[in-house]
Length: 355
Image (tube, rainbow, N blue to C red; front, side, top):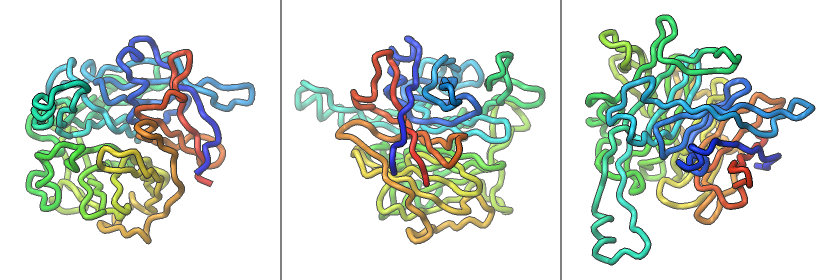
């Protein structure tokens, strides 16, 4: 997979100080704009395209920050990060999802063996990570897309306020329930991708990977009739089940992001554990159709190409189909290498062709 060019994403001082530009985890195009998110805050960011004389995008700037707590209630309030790992856009809505993961504390350089052992034994739950947020999209006075708390009968809403998160839904799942108490980087539950198609959401798990098979969860959220600021899950597939699981043979890799492309899903794959690579983009044809398979073999998946990765850096975390001639993806990276950081405080993303 050839990198055709790089484009600069430029952020304001506050976001740079929060290191959002070096912790990018999700991206979606929306006309002239990009919606992006980092995994260290409880915000999403809008960037606007900079065009050259031929109308080709050379970068994105004019950052506008949206604090999720200004639009929906958050379980732990505005001060705690939400670890946003996926963004999706469809039918006038912008969706954002947290990792829904527990985290094990890291060993810090220079710590004594006793302190290091203690940190490795400490597992933390941060409630803002366990949210799914739906935001109404509107056209702002500047002609650019914006998100609001309310637009006519459409309301910003959240799932995950009171034991109704996606992981609560999985407490009796025969495949995933055993992993709910395991931290994300230990092959526990770790959501890292979301795609919207019609009234369905497709949620990709970086972990667990089950004997080489990655997991995708399909849900159908709707507004809670008792509280327009909350979501509830509706039955999927004509029965009473509130979710469906799909298992993809990705050769031992997990799902790092999802992006719709017609009725197909483009799947960014990478290691489930704390490793650098390999990183691939895979097409699952017909994934958004009602009769999509629940067991998807390697032969039913098309590998479109391999993305670059570094040694401890340049971790591909988000992909978005660009509105350009041909099929091109914008790829954003977590932990970017020094070569991706610009003198103006920006970060370089890759534009790659799918051929």
